[in-house]
Structure formats: structure tokens, C-alpha cells
Image (tube, rainbow, N blue to C red):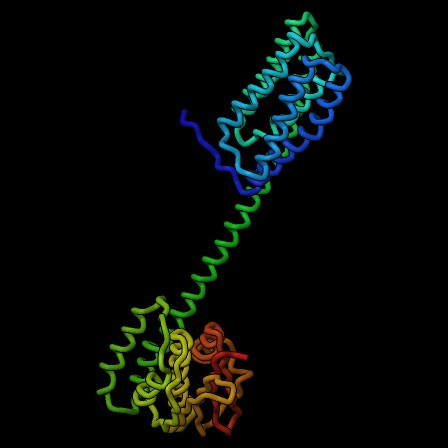
Length: 371
């Protein structure tokens, strides 16, 4: 059977990092005073040697918390040598009962080992077994019973249980975080797909649908149709690609006015340079507004203006003196207004406003940027 390795999540990795530092500090807090008290009580070199080893090990590990250690292999080897030395020191110090300073040193070591080495469970288990085995060998060589060693086994099991419970909680958080990230990604993908669909529908309305309507209603020479159809095909082929870079809106609006189904008087004060996406949004909106003049206004003339206002915002207007309408009751089904004009401009960081009332003509105004 193939073995599957589960990647550690960010929360689990952070937990292991914090617990490793916690284990080193707790061990130092316990070992340093115990070693000092052991030496003061016995006042013998046989105690001073293992005490010095334990103190030196704690100081070195505290130093490694500030400066990167040489690597897990050398650190684990040094760890094993220290616990072997502490356990086997009972050959010359005599058996150390559970109330002795040496047992306190060994006890805190086995209790913190799972937390220090939890990211490497095999190494942690080997170091725990080495600590217990060394202490058991030392007590056996001194003729003592197995009671202290059994207590170390229980303490090790409890420490491992505590660590595994913490790791389980961290993994639960990692799974919840992954699910939330997947949900956010799904929402983002759905929003992007919906935006692409809206853009395609708006482009389809502005190009092929409008051209077919203009051809059906007549009113002008059919010589314009091949060029207009080629432009429509190019526009549909570009969707859903987004235009890049910048564009001069003044250069785009001139041809749009010339190709309109109505006569357009133009007042464009360029250059009007802006990002390509809002430029295309305004261009499509102007085409739609001019088409609406021909289809709905009942007149064959319109006025197109484009300029910078006093706040350096680009303002474009299409005006007509037609029959007008009530924008508030146009309804969402009027895709030309809601999608091609207002919706497109809002999506590109600008604002489009339609002002009209029955019998008073219409004004469509684009402002970029908004605000």
C-alpha cells in the first residue's frame, strides 16, 4: 500500500515552532535551579559533573533560540548524549529516587521532548526512549527498583497525549482555513465568470444585435453594413479579453460618431488619455446611446461632447432633443441602459447617468474617474 504524506498546514507549523521554544524555556526554568540545589545539597564532584552537563545543555539551547541551531541531526545527537550522561551518572552517584534533583531533570526532559520534537515524531520517540532507557539502566546498575522508570513512562505518555491533542486542534484550524480559502476562490471564480458573461452579453447587444436592428429599420445606405459587421465580429472575438494599457478617448469617439445611424455634431476637446478598460466602456456606451437616439428618440440628430472638467475628470455627454422618457420606469430589461451604459461604467470605476423626461429630450453623461 502506498503511504500518503499529509502536508502540515500553517497553523500546525506555527504550533510546533511555538511549542519547541516553550519546551526549551520550561526545561531551563526547572533544570537550572534543580542542578544548583543538587550541588549545594551534596557538595560532591559526582553531583557537580552531571549538573554542569545539564546546565550547559540548557544554556546552549537557550542560545539556539536566538541564533539558528546547526540542524536537527546534530541537535538530536547532543540531546541523546546529555540524557545518556544524566541517566548513567547513577553508576557513581548512586540510585536517585523520585524526589531527587536528578529525577526532576530527567522528568522535565521526557515531559518536554514531545513538544520540542513534535514536528519529527520518530526522532521525538527515539529521544524519549533513550532518556527512559538511560535512567532505567542507571537505576538498575545502582540496585534500585523500577518505580522511577515506570513513572517516567507515564509522564511521557501524558506529554504525548497533550501534544497530539494540540496538534489535532491545529490541524482542524488548518482544514477550516483551507475550506474557507476554497470557498473564497469559488466565489471569486463565479464572480469572474459572471462578470465575463455580463460583458459578453453587453458586447453582443452593442454589436450584432444593434447592427441587425439598424439593418432591419433601414434609414441609411446599406454600404455601411459590411464595415460595421467586420467591427462587430472583431469586438465579439475579443471578449472576454480585457484591453490593456491606455487609450486616447478622443480618437475613439470620432469614428463612433461618424458610424452612427443619426447625424452627430461633435465637440471633443482632446487628447483624453485614460486606461483602456474605462475608455472601452465609454466608447460602447456612446455607441449604444447614439443607437437609442435613432431607435427611440424620434429625431435624427444628436450632440456628442467630451472634455476635462475642472477636477481633471473626463466628462462625455450625448444629448438629443427627442421625445425623451422616464428613466425610473425603464426597468432592468432595458439592457442598453442598465448593462451597456450604467453597468459597464460602474464596473470600470466611473459613473454613467441618464437624464431624461417625456417631451424634453435626453442626456447621457459619463464621468471618469468617479468621485
